[in-house]
Length: 124
Image 1: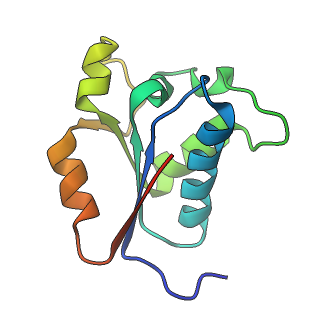
Image 2 (image 1 turned 45 degrees about the horizontal axis):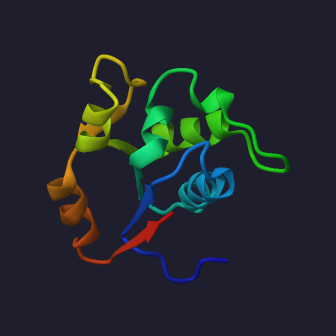
């Protein structure tokens, strides 16, 4: 049981299919925090940037892990999901390409979030 909750939990996912367990952990921790009532900002960076595209989360498989599309949907409905500006540009992903509810923002916004009063940050 969470007894002391941060005002904001910022989770930065840096991997994708290249590191499935780390990817699943990032999504699982973020969605568990949302379910516990924590305000969550979830960042898709590096190879996780691909999950901002429709259908990509459904292609991810990891035995004994919650389905990534379900976790992403929870984050989109109750948290905030951001795709890294540079990561998107390197993959030629634009705002027109991403799932509804995903914003594209850069390092300045990330730093602002992690430096906000009471924020906690996790990087996977």
